[in-house]
Each structure stands twice: as structure tokens, then as C-alpha cells.
Length: 206
Ligand code: HEC
Image 1 (cartoon, rainbow, N blue to C red):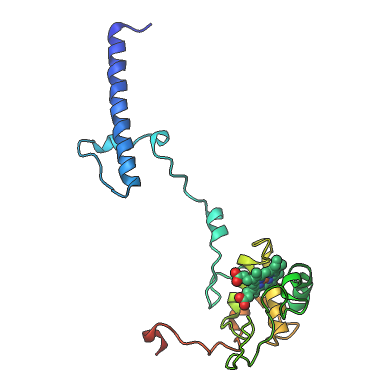
Image 2: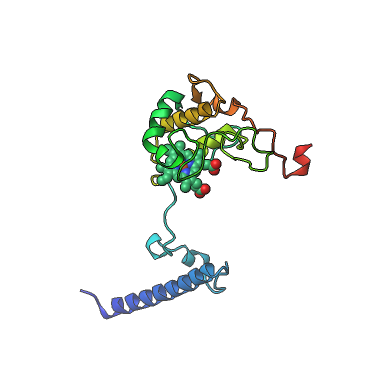
């Protein structure tokens, strides 16, 4: 059973708690508004509030979650995942998941042609495909894994994406049918238009 004096202590404690919360709330508003200013009369230890009293800014991302977003592949093949594929397997997947939009032979349909256009870039009607125009083979892997098939992005396995990349490179006459595309062979493929670009950074192009 609590005494009168215990109640007084409890009341003072809860007043302090309310003040600390009010300071924290105003600090949170200041941070949210872009001002990293703290109320000048707030002792630092009052601002280190228990987790449940802090603004709800989320939790640190796990390594697994970050890996799911960390998809970008450098033109030199940096960050290419394990796996491999050849054109024959890629042709099967292409027929099932890509041909409806890009044409059975990849030369275009409802959407972009992915095959052909070689030798047309300097003509009055250039046909820019991943084969005739793109400077890096690694970008084909990156793009397909990231964005295709259009209605179901990121639904393909890495082996499927390697196989599709092999199929499209083969259909463009860039690799042989039995060439195994993987993290070490893909960056070494020289694309037909690899030298058709100039660096936007002058000092680097020297
Ligand atoms: C429902 C239609 C559809 C399907 C299915 C589809 N695509 Fe695409 N694809 C598109 C569209 C639309 C674009 C252009 C997207 C843009 O520019 O934002 C595109 C662009 C591309 C490009 C880039 C072409 C360029 O020159 O910029 C590649 C490569 C590609 N798709 C590969 C594939 C592959 C491989 C598959 C099968 C796994 C596939 N697509 C399935 C609609 C589709």
C-alpha cells in the first residue's frame, strides 16, 4: 500500500517523464523539419530515450535485405553473381517468357527489337538493339535481371538470366551457340559497338 509521500515522489517522477518526452518530441520535430538542433536546456542523457519512446524511423536493414537491392553490375562485371547459362537453354526461356513482346526471333514485336540492326547505326534509319548499340555485354545481364520479363521483374534465377543473355548474344552473332556465359566470361565479351561511344569525362578519355 502506498503512503502519501510515495505518491508525491511518483507524481514528481511522472512530471519529469512528461517534460523529457515533450523535449524529445520537439527534438524529433526539429530533426524531421531538417534542423538538427537540440533544446538548449536538455541534458544529453535525457535525450537518449528508451527505444519505444524514440521516433519510429524503422530498423536497420539486414544483410539479406540489402543484397536484394544491391543488384547493380559494373560494366567490368563487378558484382555478377554465381551461375551460368548457354544459348540453347536461353532460347527455351525466351520462347516461354519473352517472345510474346519481343518477337519469336527477338527482332521485335509489340516491344523493342533485341536482335539485329548491325551496321545501321550510321545510316539514316539506325536500329539500336542491345546487339548493335549497347557497349557492354554485362548490361544485358543487369537489365534482364532487374527489369524483365516486364510483367514479372526479378522473377528469374541467375542461371536463367545468364542463359537468356547467352541466347541474345548468340542471336546477335556475337558468341557461339555453346559458349558458356558466367561471371568470368561475360565481361570479356567485346560488343560490336564497344568503341562507338566517347567518355563524357574529358580527363578520363585521354
Ligand atoms: C509484356 C511485354 C514484355 C515481356 C514479356 C518482356 N519484355 Fe523486355 N521489354 C518490354 C518493354 C516494354 C521494354 C522497354 C522498357 C523500357 O524502355 O522501359 C523492354 C525492354 C527490354 C530490353 C531492353 C531493350 C533496349 O534496347 O533497351 C531487354 C534486353 C529485354 N526487354 C529483354 C527481355 C527478356 C529477356 C524477356 C524475357 C525474360 C523480356 N524482355 C520479356 C516488354 C516486355
